[in-house]
Amino acid sequence: MDTFISLILIFVSAAIINNFVLHYFVGICPFLGVSRRVDTAFGMGCAVTFVISIASFLSWMFTFFILQPGAPLSSWMWLLFGGDPDVIVDLSILSYIIYIFVIASSVQFVEMYVRKFFPPLYKAFGVFLPLITTNCAILFACLEILKQVPGEAHWGLHHALVFSIGGGVGFTIAISLMAGLREELDMCDTPKSLRGPGIALIVGGILAMAFMGFTGVDKGIANSIEMSRTPVTLPQTFTEPKSEAVGLPHEPPLVKPTDESNESPPVETKDKQDSPQPPIQNEEEKADHVN
Image (cartoon, rainbow, N blue to C red):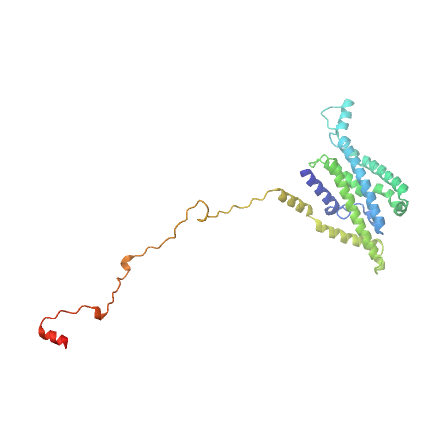
């Protein structure tokens, strides 16, 4: 999974974030020379992608087995001719020569293929198809692979191929956008002093500033992938058990005790007719009572 994530980041970085043309400013010659029509620009982008893929494959093979310090094939040849085994063989000084031969042979193969099967496209390319040999974008990809193979990244063949394909896709995107904008500019009232390469360079600079907005996208993708891989632990909340639950006895309601000493005694009211009369003592009082 980590390898797949690294391949995605390498591709996105080479194609959009660190675009060869708009970030490193390599491959400017075909970017300005073949960007007058969209179909021709797209064909040039596909041809560059194919050439850069083959050149990166061959350059990784030469770098890993021959050019890098301590390469297996060069070390074996050194020991075969009686060299000191403690010496580390480093042939990276020959990288430019070997890479130029690899790129030139790849371009010749593509030129023969396009001439045979796509004659109109070959005529549209004109002199720019052989100039792919001197396209610094392809040489830049080969030199970047040379830097990453023995370095801390330890790029394998799959890393080199993904990097080269991403660079070719980024070149195709840049030259196709430029061709579309230049077709629209041909219909505009451009000042005479800016017609041709002048307005093309201004548009290219604006495109480069626009692509600067993608800076940091690779880090955002890496952070989002890491967050999706880490499990999310939710905090546990404690809830009190209810008395109506099964197995729990029902608690009687609490009654507030009352103080009996503070209560006033009940007042008994009786009718006056029901109250007993005092006894009569003599006859005079009795007569008075009768009257």
